Image (cartoon, rainbow, N blue to C red; front, side, top):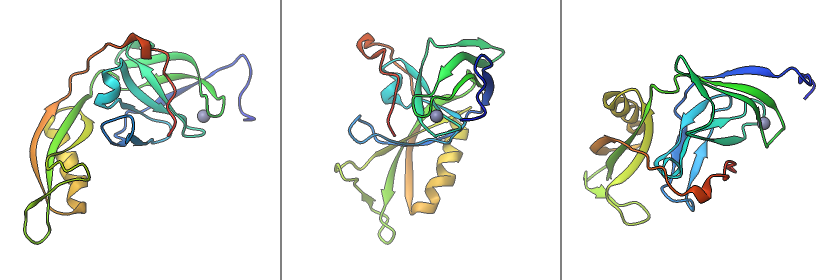
Length: 179
Ligand SMILES: [Zn+2]
């Protein structure tokens, strides 16, 4: 990293983007970060007091942002001297639209292309869940349909806002996530 000047930390704007996040337990959890952006944490992490994930613009490494980190100024969460564990890049983060978006859960069934009958996932569940963040329930619905329609027949069961539960203080220092 030749462009880092010691004593002069760059300030970088991170837009809020919808990352693809799959899985509902730590075991089958997979995320696809968009470098240089942040996304709202999925339900699993919200429950542990994690509000968001950021992805390093340099090396793509994702880091967890706790709900109490940073200072919100005009809807932008400013976090000073954040250091990437992946490449050591240190910068001031400006997480844009911090308060605007909420996490929504979409419950849906995947349908057989020919018969239209619901097909269970590999856990034998007929109703599947996917998470996305959006400004409104309607936006969450539209975004989901836009992506899902390219993957075959489906039926949306419901779309709801996910409420986070902040507990489990023991997990507080677990701020690095390997992707
Ligand atoms: Zn990095």
